[in-house]
Length: 264
Image 1 (cartoon, rainbow, N blue to C red):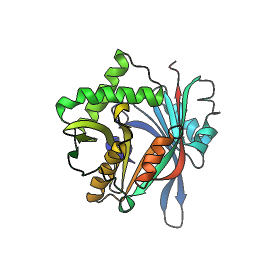
Image 2 (cartoon, rainbow, N blue to C red):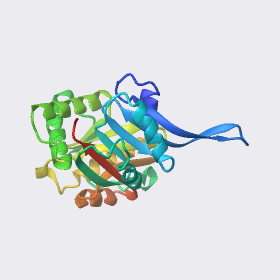
Image 3 (cartoon, helix red, strand yellow):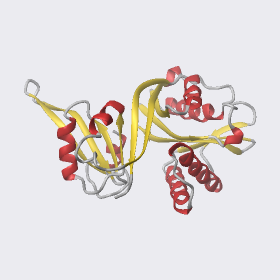
Image 4 (cartoon, helix red, strand yellow):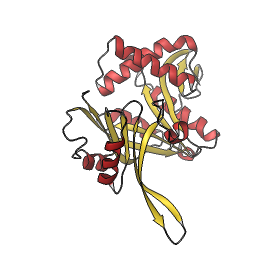
């Protein structure tokens, strides 16, 4: 929904834009239509699935209409499992697979940690001069979570990601004595929901509730803007992260899988 709001249905290869295919069903009683399933391939080659039904038919059309090659497929785990055998995907070597849990919390159920609001601790957008540090953090985050090796190109991509999040006013930091100790970004925000991504605390700062604080700060501020729910993706192989999110009120909602592919 966020990508549709930002990029619309036109695919000129820009950020948030993609080529969309949906299964649409007519209701003769009400003379209306409803979308039963959808999938899209975006400008960066990511394919997102919401295919509770008509999966093969939708993928057949998307494969034929796709204006670019795919690099990643993501969606509810059961749906991803079903689509991996599709002719469009099955012969491509898989680079990585990540199985996670989408966790959600209502803004009313948030349990903010004591450290958020403690003396000397602040929650705010990053300053311009802090962006190089946060770019380095994001490169470390990608290496730790997704195995993306640090090199000049990867580090540049990480810095650009942080800069883009900053320009869109998505990134937030927790600071102690005005020194950043945690980072996260509200990468998608709708009237009812905010999605949180790229949560990172440097190894020497972990175990002090800073990850809880930066996540809770985003949820708290979104609630003040009228948002009623927050979500994030937690890797199943990161039990410490799941425990931290659970501590502030998040609960597992459904399984989510990301499959990354070798470039052709």
